[in-house]
Amino acid sequence: MLTNPKRRASKKKQLTARKESIEWDGARIFVEIARSGSFRSAADALGLSFTAVQRRLDRLERGLDMTLLTRHVDGVRLTAEGEQVLIAAQRMEAASFELMRSQNLDTGAQFGQVKLGVTEGLGTFWITPHLAEYQKRHADISVHLLCGMPSVDVLRLEADLAVQLIRPSAKDLKLVKLGRLHAMPFATKDYISRYGMPKSVADLENHRVVMQIADQIVKVDDFPLDLKTALQKANIPIVANMSSTHYSAVLNGTGLSNLPTYVAAFDKRLVPIDIGVRAEHDIWLVYHPDSGRITRVHQMIDWLVEIFSSKSYPWFGDKFIHPRDLPSLDTGQLSSCMQQIDFASRPPEPQRMREESNMEKPGKPRTRPR
Image (spheres, rainbow, N blue to C red):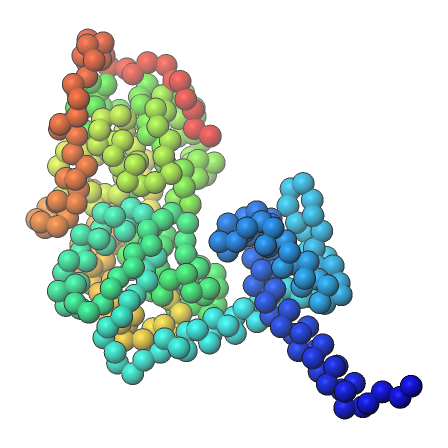
């Protein structure tokens, strides 16, 4: 029986459209699975259920009539076909983000929201206290502050711009070096009166050391050998992933640890410890060129450059300046922000701890850094 050519062409067109729709819908799912390395991680990143992610990938594979990846105990692995499809899917994803960015372009509007990703310490203790002044200049701008140690993905529109300690490698981004973050060990006067002042790196094995293990900071494996050796014998009472927790533990007298040198400018409760241990991280401002053309984003860029200026705030300069030589920062917002972590009203110490107040050593280690 003969088939109507028009009906056959219409059916073929419908199948082609359906296949394209399936591929477009599943592209971002497939890209996230490949990026995350597992269905579970992709589901968490996308805010979907594990079943939904698996179902959409299955639908994509059926539409393309090929297997894109294989499942293993340690995650997923792309097939040869999957490698090729991933390249195309990433182009599709980039095009969709480009379209979304174009919708945000304006001709000078000075209202709306700006999403700023920033490391948790700089966001909490430096940028947030300065935002009051920013809001006086730009009262109609709502700043969405995304504080965390993992860096945000500006290309994927997780934020309009980001302040981070790792220089990104993507070529499509604009980079501005805001300054340099210097760090050295600090402790409270109370801690030093109880356990003494370390005179060398080796002395740390007789002290309590608060550790921070997180993205964008120096990993323990990259510490100098003498420091790693001392820390293996030190008492590690707390290992924190967040900068605010890490800072609070030091301020509470739990132990000593590396902190940014700028804390000495407005928090006189901390004493720097000179044992030759220092760390430094360049501070990078990252944004997409298209975002930089948006008036409210450009205003935020100018403001960030201003509050990290080494002329006004020398602790952000490339050269290390010892905290004792830094000028005091008499800024109400900053002081109040730091003073929120005030442990003057904490409960009295148990009798046993009071009896140990004259000890010079905190005892043998119970926990070691991982």
